[in-house]
Length: 229
Image 1: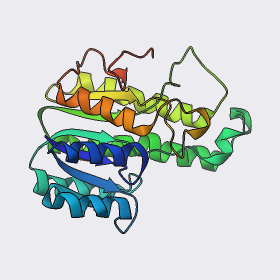
Image 2 (image 1 turned 135 degrees about the vertical axis):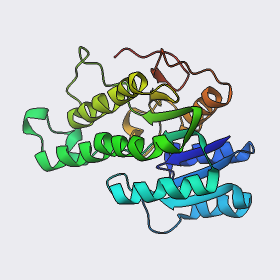
Image 3 (image 1 turned 90 degrees about the vertical axis):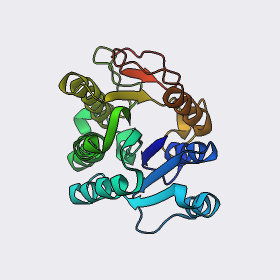
Image 4 (image 1 turned 45 degrees about the vertical axis):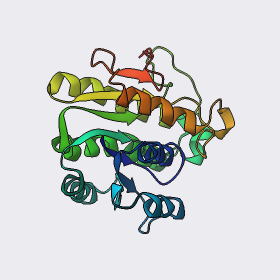
């Protein structure tokens, strides 16, 4: 498979790049940093020409547009894209919505929602017919199942989840999916962690390589189980 992972520096994104490469696939790994992080550099050394690392700040439309062209030159058409890029800012962990920092609310939406749309806009043309474009979202997006924890993050991921539904009725040649990755032991999710990112990455790997995705169930978890919107 020819796979693009955006947000591949650490955590789930890195593990996705690692597992696809370990199983013989070709990967383009998008990162926020200006230089390749040591862990990805080690993967490059191990897997050589099967790994491309490219700049992919989802807040920067020009950079994402350029990244899409770089990926197409490297991969041809991509069979799968997984967008892992996301933020959960510190104040959101302690402030109720009515006391939130509006600047942090905007920053959260810029990455988690607008950034996801930018990725869809520029990478959809790079996808192979029948390919899958996954946006990693969250379990906390149900409109009726509202909670008061990390409200800015939850709102942004609710909107990001609906992108998949909208795209699936807009185009017919690529499947779009919003995936809850599980409560992972990462920098973002450590306080509520139940699984390691390796487990989530392996679940997503299986969904993509075993062709078990269905456009009729576009909001799912990393095991392929339907989630309640």
